[in-house]
Image (cartoon, rainbow, N blue to C red):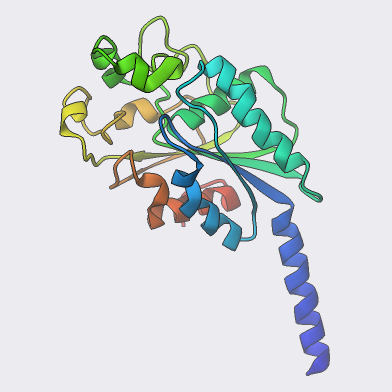
Length: 234
């Protein structure tokens, strides 16, 4: 009995060590904060991952300025954790574009897998429609103005994914006004079609809105599954 318990302890310790070697950087979306990713953070920590939940000033800088600031901080924080050998990302909305921007300019040998929630990978028609509305630029900042489909679009300038990325798109909305500016189906901020990215590893649609998908149980479970297996499939 004692011998069996000893072996079980060894197995559990080995499993925890293997999981702790993986660090996940969380990046929130535009006009949000790290608190919006807390449910995801708690779930990933329960799964044994090291987690770094980055808070960054999403409305104060351009995407080119935010990427090294936010993603760079997350990478450095993971690298500072003893034993970490792999760095994953789970991003919401703008956060996914920051990862694409960062990886377009930086090599990351420790890169693992990336999960993007509602990313405007092809830009958003809503930004095009509302870009000229008074107050839009003040509310959304420089980065928000770069998420459209015009010549100023950063997502459209970035190339295909050359890394493992799973994309989760929502098809429900709580904002009928913005949704009226988007091709259906959409999540209230970006159409399902515009979340897609050439070279993506996997793709899934969920019945949730852009604003709250990051805290929904199914989205969290899918994110964990992709980080573990490189696929959303069970």
